[in-house]
Image (cartoon, rainbow, N blue to C red):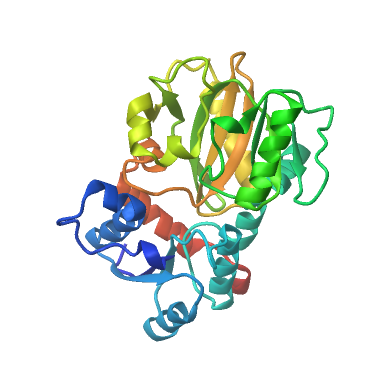
Length: 341
């Protein structure tokens, strides 16, 4: 690929330094993805500019108009401190007739609204745990189809925000208590789904029309007691000390039943198409002890840090981190937004 002009778009508080000299590991964790992407794009020969935004897109507009980048590498996960607004920023890029990496606005909308996402998956007969949404300000009443234990989480927040061990509830009293916690503390509607006891797997998908899946990855709890639910809480995902203490790792899935990996790969592509995703995504699954597959979530624009799930599974599939960045940029350039027709 010839050298490109690339604007790397991110939150203004996550703009990384040009070098890691003198930076402690704990300090860099906040912006590791941003550093890894920017550094790799420079290594493979591209001319990049880092743009951080929070509630004002004028700086982004100036760069697009004056510098005329070939593509915007989108790492922005929120706007105005609202995670759902990332889709509007991508919509703004389309209004500016600017190519960008990652998922399109419609795909972000459908995947981020977990209740709508699950309704779409159910319509397409893609297996997902039984679920219900409990809107803020409405009376809490459990539908009979929902059987304990249940998992309570935000209907819109990402990155396991609001998920803890207390999110698994076993009776109506605790269910009401946890739903009220989501309403009052997270300030979103609550999504409640049946908790599937079993193993948790991730499948990376990349592409627009022609899709490729990466090897199945597994979230493992090597030191967690068996009587504690093995779920991806906020601490499991982001607390390094907690991860070390409980032996939490993600690795290539092993000891799978015959055909299970292929089936998850096929389901991942069905999800991707049903939700009109583009660019790249990660599908989250739980597999019960009798090898039944349940889709938990679809995650467009997942974590791109070097050494994290998507990059590691891509590496296992023969795609280096540099090649992964190259492909993401290519898919961004090749995505046909409505203005291009």
